[in-house]
Image 1 (cartoon, each protein chain N blue to C red):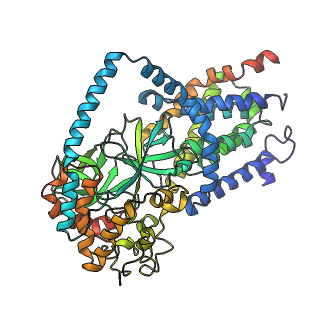
Image 2: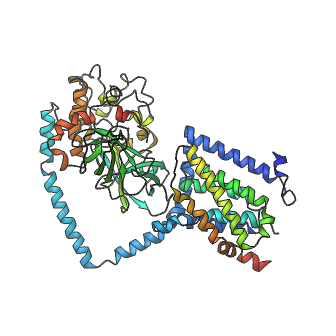
Image 3: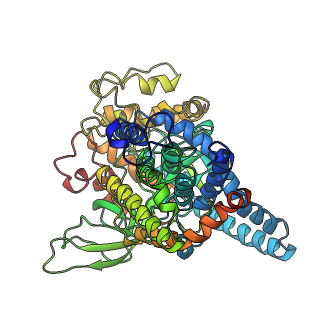
Length: 427
Length: 158
């Protein structure tokens, strides 16, 4: 090694020769890359570094933040009034839309033999602002101003008011990097809402489109179809709107259709996004196990559970959890997803929300025991989308017809009947 | 050549360059944005190889990784390679006229991007857009100016 460095600059350098130092640094970086890539052992280091970088990132984004603040504080009265009117109108519309929601949800629950309607799958929301800095310009990533101190965890779903935006990749103490659904490295398991057909939507690399590369040429899809999350993949719950299909090319000589879709979320203009925590017991919640890449273990709530704990004590968070361990024995190490483990704060809300648990216990716990396996999985899933975001659109007939194919796949049984989404699951 | 004096300026200019690297810009301008931090590190590895050199390259690369790399250590590897070569040859490079220096810098930037590109591919984050090869060109174009700015105080002092 030393001989390598003796060529040029031995004269000026005290200490180890540059060749030697370069070798050291090269080995160091290879080790770092290996650890980071293979084992994720550097999460801690990344966490610290990201925390250290945050002040710089804030400083860089401060001019635009200051400009925005100035702009807002000097906005004219007229503009404010106009905006206020617009918002009031919007709120009225939303209230009208959700007016019957409670009643419908209860009715739906009764029809499906649940004693009570499920609570919405989203348990907690947190608004986050996009820090205005340029990460890698050729990758679709953004930085948001919430980190583990706010309870954010890795692979958390990020939405805006129109639809899905992406998920967190690296989480620092006060900031988190979000990979957008349009990044070429990102794939969302989606379902076509009209037919329930499941597939994968892959980012196309520009801010405004997704590709559906795994649809056969004769797949039932047409422009205008709405894509919603299918609930597979372990990150996003079922039923959130993702994109609308804009282009379908079928080529007779190509086995696969070429399909493009445009995300609902205003990905390139958003400045505010929403981080969501989901009820893990909810049937539409992202199945936690596949987040770790283990296909064998499913959502414990969806498993055929041998015996319902006969009327457990009313402290329900325990009740829903107690049946879980015996069933997926191999999965219990894997079943805590990245979610509740990494965050100190996220378990808190679930415990600290007294009204929720009684509902969940009534609905989820007895359901699997009462019926066969597929029914409970499919049944409440039809409810979920409405509870979630997309209230108006999918309350029509597809609810019955499409719920079954959409969410029925409980991971343990599904790999055989559902090849399209079993294949490239890892985004 | 004074060895330890430029260390403060080195860190300061590197920080400024980092800020310039992550400053939000409109998309078209962002595509042609030179890799300011790489240019600065290159400059210091030529002007003060003992104070800067490979160590500076590695740590700035790690910083770049935190900001924009999919894998930690990627830019660090590329930058330490490039700074190794330039700091080894710094006397030859320094004696060249500006135009030839710019050519050398272009070669260094291309080498840097090749390494980053390769590691992108090996680690499973391929990014094959041809747009990524624009910045070496703009970097080489801006090099004379950057070197003049970075060397401003140096020149006056000595």
